[in-house]
Length: 112
Image 1 (tube, rainbow, N blue to C red):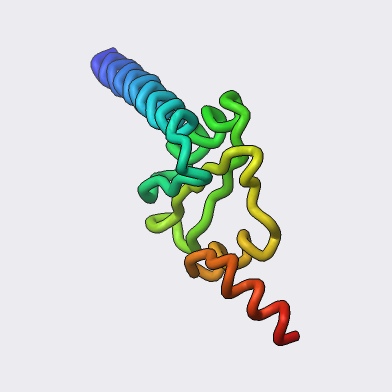
Image 2: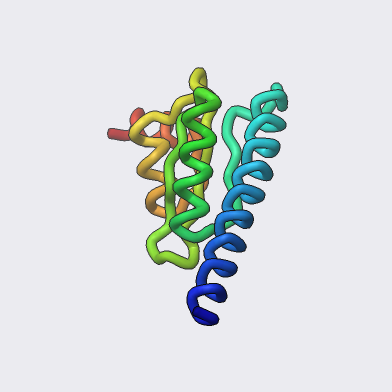
């Protein structure tokens, strides 16, 4: 029974942490929505559970979100306002780990 009690305590602690994390993400996302000059925001790398919480928060808020980064430790989420939803080209740049530069993309298109 002692181990079961410890497990239960751990689970409650995890649940509380998830709830607190979600609240923090909701605050950050709502600040992002109000930040007029900010079409997208990149969040710190986070684990799978945290990313799924953030994706959910973004969806509820009417935003588009994507995860980038190859390995589990460096995967991060970017959220986009609907009117600035990323093009495939922009997404490919992030997937390659590059910054998105519309002017450079335009240049590339012209050179093709």
